[in-house]
Length: 290
Image 1 (cartoon, one colour):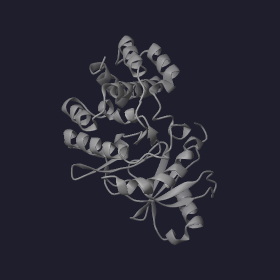
Image 2 (image 1 turned 45 degrees about the vertical axis):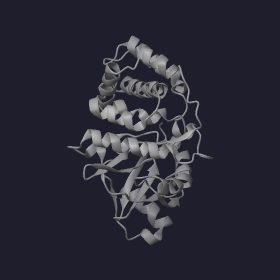
Image 3 (image 1 turned 30 degrees about the horizontal axis):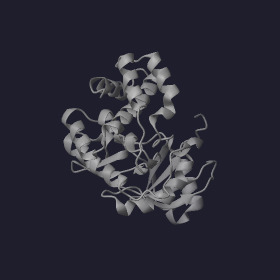
Image 4 (image 1 turned 135 degrees about the vertical axis):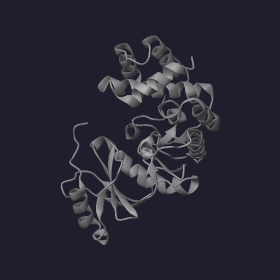
């Protein structure tokens, strides 16, 4: 995506002052850990401003405003709740949002955590999300880059990346993982999923998972994409604890491996030294499930 506007403190200040003068006295400052799909800024101590970084993320704004207030009271941990929706202005071309600020440290910046406890906390949250009534929820599509569909939606891209090769997984093993991922579909009713349970989207406090943020890729469908942390985040006993908590069948885990494989392969295709994706490929090679 090349249509990325410049988003900085000065822009956010202008947008807030023009559209929400009641917040004019609140200072704007960058967050310690920012995302790629959206840029986030603190607005005083109790609020945050979230702005899509490119046109491809616009559909997520309306989705989050429609659904996060409904999901929040049904989940065991805090999630972002929108306070106000901003409009394009001050040279910024997209809608944007004001949210309640959620305290906690992004997992990506945290240290000395018990990984088994974290795995169980995340698993319990994802199970609770899965159990929320999904009627009328957003089906997979461009708004979430087809999370909730079978991983085969990215078949051509995945196979090309497998054929191109990667240092950390044998192409034959990768192809077996991918073929197994395409062998089944979610045949139960659609369920809620988060879609991007990554370290930057998980907040921790006092050694426990304290909040889950960034529901841009959420939707209702196949929850296999929510099992990807098994290889992106966890090893050994933590992975087993995550799996025991999630309680999904082997076919869903096979599709999850496909999602993890696809994402890691296309990342190392563009950045061969990406440490996180290389680690994911090594974990998949050691735990192929086939």
